[in-house]
Image 1 (spheres, helix red, strand yellow):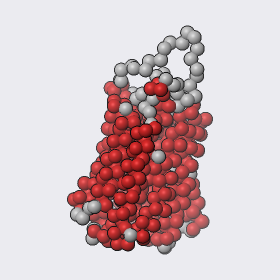
Image 2 (tube, rainbow, N blue to C red):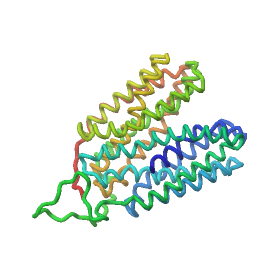
Image 3 (cartoon, rainbow, N blue to C red):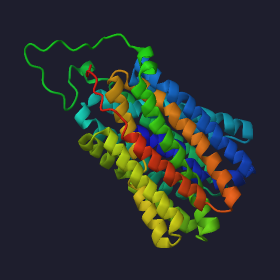
Image 4 (cartoon, one colour):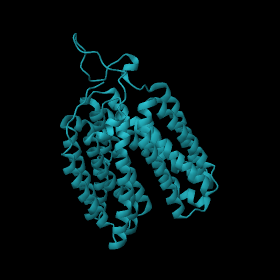
Length: 396
C-alpha cells in the first residue's frame, strides 16, 4: 500500500495530469519539465538520506511522516496558481516520496530471512505497477468529471488517498519482528546452546561506506537507472512521433506496461531467491535488453506490444533484487541505510540516461539509437551482475 501511494499516486500519476494542468495554468512544456525535475531532485535527496533516517529513528516513523508530507503537498499542488507554488509543492512531494519508498522497500530485509527476502520484496514492488494502473483509471475519470478544474481534483483525491495510507501504515507497520518477540519469517528456530540474538547492537554507519561489495552493488544499480529511464522517458514520443501511433494507442500500451509490472517484482524476487542475486540480476538485465531491442528494431504494433509485455514483466526486477541484496550485505538492521546509499547511484544513472539518449536522438534524428544504446548498456549490466558476491551477513 505504501508503494501504491508513494510511487503509483505521487509519482507515476503526474504524467497523466500534465496535459490538463498545462492548460489550466498556462504552463509551457519547459515549466512542466522543471516541475518533474523538482520532484525527482526531492526524491533523490530523501531516497539517499531517508534510509539512514529509517535506520536511526525507525522505519514506521519515517514512512508515515513521508506519506503525510506527500499527501499534504499533493493537495497543495491542486491549489497552485503560480509556477513557484507548483514547483515548491512538487519538490516537497518528491522528498516525501523518497522518505516513504526506500524504507518500505527495505522492510523485506527486516522481516524475512535471506531465502525468502527477494519474494517478499517483490510483493512490495508490486505496488508500483498497481498504483500506476489505478491512477491510470482514476485520473482520466476525475479530469473528465470535473472539467477544466479536473486536474485540481485529481491532486485532491490522490493526496487524500496517500494521507489515508499514512494512517493505515502507522497502525500496521512494525520496524522489526523482534519488537513483537518474533523471528524473521523463514529463519531457523533457535535450539539450546545457540548464542543469544543481538537485538541492540550499535549501528555501524561507517561500515557501509567501507564495504566494497556495496559500492559494486551501487555500480550495478547505476546501469539500471541509466538504461531503463531511456525507455521510460522516450516511450510515448517514439511511438507517436516516429511510429505514428495515436495518443490513445500510446496510453493503452503504457497501461499494459503498468498492468504487467504488478507481477514482475514477485517473479524476479522469487527467482533471485532460487538462483542467487547475481544470476537473477544478470538474467533480468538480459530480458530488459531484449525488450529495448524489440522496441527499436520491430517497428510494428506486434513488436510494440511484445516489448511492452516483456518490459512490464521485468520493469522493477532490478530494484527488487537490489533491495534484497542490500539486506544480504549489510544486514536487516542497516538495510534501509544500505538501500538508500545505492539509490544514489540509481539517481545518477537516471539523471544521465535521458540527457545522453536525447542527445543521440537529436544527433541521429531517431530514437532507435538511444534504445539500442540502452540494450548494450543492459548487456554490460548482465556481465557486471555476475560479479556480485553471495555475501551473507549475520541475521541480527
